[in-house]
Length: 117
Image 1 (cartoon, helix red, strand yellow):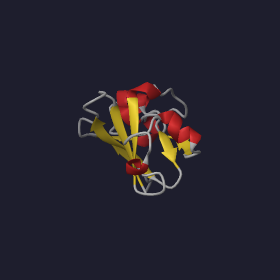
Image 2 (spheres, helix red, strand yellow):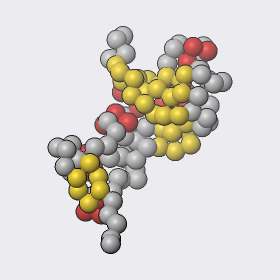
Image 3 (cartoon, rainbow, N blue to C red):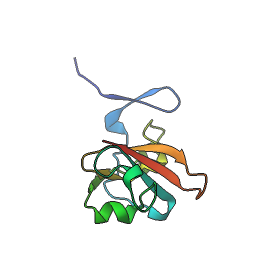
């Protein structure tokens, strides 16, 4: 008996994983569209002297970025259930779980990406 890996699709059906596109390794991230909230840990956002949220550059300066999420655009277009579009290419931070979508900031209109220690 042959084992198959199936993926749940957006329409509720299942498709064989080998027939679906892989996630792109690299993509682009418009860093101006996002704010980053760090919950807990040394860099908790409530300890941030510049305000409650970090900008992408603040994460870079602190050396927190360990990699980036894969771009799932092709998989999403194929109808696969994957994480939301705002999480494509987001940084993976040392010592934090995430990224997680946390809504839209009322003041700036930017998407908030949350990480938890």
